[in-house]
Image (cartoon, rainbow, N blue to C red; front, side):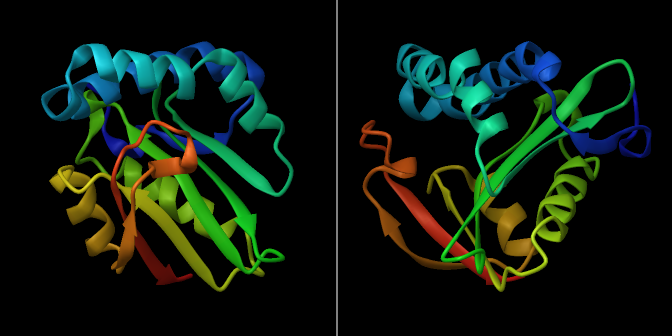
Length: 168
């Protein structure tokens, strides 16, 4: 099994999207089936992680979409966009396939995203309160809980989330 050093972070391309979608579906089921149930996770994933949704993110202005690649497979992905005239980064997605979690890939993805927006002063994200692994990861990176959302991502799925922030 590859170590984190075998992975490099690069900008995603359209040819990566089917593999990224599969990674997201696997990761979401692994993480959220116990919280929301498999059917609900499939419904959300079909909307948020469709090829059309991923394609739109790839083309979104003032954003960065990166993957962790080892030349054979993609082990993780991250997507972020700026707001407030580029002063704030909103980290929309950072996922590492369950098979590769705990190997530094998430840290490498986060570091790349943070460096992509040199004018930014703050980075924010939303995380499911019951996702203790993600919360611990972000808290290790210096994120602090700043509030709550009743609709994570504003996508109409009524998913509660914690809002985290930290300086860049």
